[in-house]
Image (cartoon, rainbow, N blue to C red; front, top):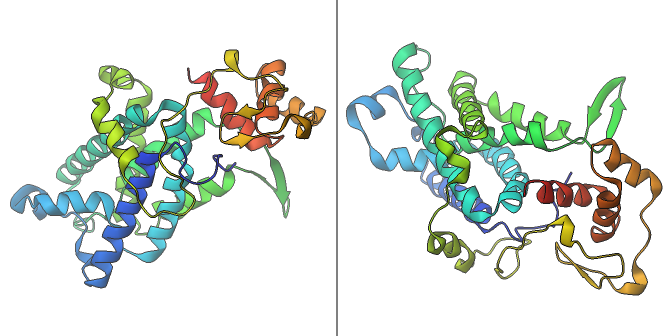
Length: 293
């Protein structure tokens, strides 16, 4: 599953967050201060260093964590496309705030001398995103390696596990707090899933022009509704897939059957495959995006 379309198209908030994480991590890494960014009991309850609280949300403490973290953030941009940049911004704020408060409360209650500093980085957002990933993203491909069963989702879980265990207790606690935040968002506590930021805040991200690979000039996000899905004779489909009328190929029956086995309507599955030019992963995302409405 690749979260198509490629790049940061229709995911400006994710793009901004990824670039911010990379810049903060590199900046403090060059200064040799990466190992001092983690929040400690003293930072929270005695010194209350606000700058450190903010920086700890963005900057990873090591290069391996940065690589796995940015990979997961980039993949999870599919959720911004599903619910829109406005609601996704609320999801980010909710995940970060709830996971931070949970971690602070856990430090106060545990008072574990071996857990005096938490690792830095957007662990709250990343592991909060694993909740909708587990519940909403279906498996499209299964395979076996040395007798063990895997799916296309396995690589995302393995990357998350690597990140979760990267600093042992220092990273496990923020990860667990992130999963808690994602679960509370899923349960719609305080009707959080209905909330939106003012439009001028959401549109701000579209006007940013980060020099990021794979992104195109910002455009207003489009939402796909299967009821209005173009027929197979359409010249232009969503997701920036311009398909000439003469080049359209009828979707393979086994691809349609795969999507139907996930619970999607056969006709919708066929139309999604046509839109995605028979890319089953892209078609899955189109169907999920339409289902979210």
